[in-house]
Image (cartoon, rainbow, N blue to C red):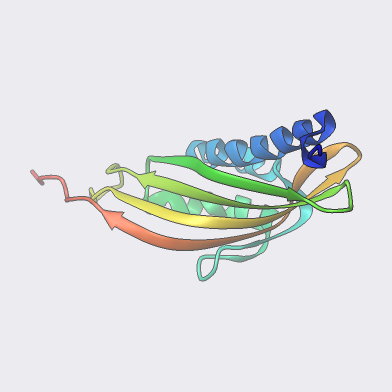
Amino acid sequence: MTDPTAAPDRLADRERIRDLAVTYCFALDDEDPELMKSVFWPDAHDDHGPLFTGLAWDFADRFVAFRDRVRPTLHLVLNHLIRFGDDPDQATGRLYGGGFQFVGAQPARAPRIVMGSYTDRYQRREGEWRILERRFVATGTVRGTAPPQG
């Protein structure tokens, strides 16, 4: 029996969706709100818990201001599961991600690693996949030791 999610078109869809996750990481690290917006539909919703809840494009515009305390960063996509249903233009996903926040802010702070999961709903419009809904839940933070001062 063949797996319908393994059809060439569906595999291409899966890769396009995975590209969204990687592009999002580059946008975070490059502090590029326009690149971040490119992975979301203009009407997309982003729920980052106490940090932000609202339109994803608004989060992109405000994100750089949040970054003053945690520069530079390195974000990674770990496991990314994508599921397709009956509608060929809809998919859901869950991915684990990590963000390394290095010592670079002034005053210097200890580096930390933030781990969490994203639950997404993706939609294809006119042949293009983007995120329509995103929810981030932080699952843990590990702090390093503070650098010596002086």
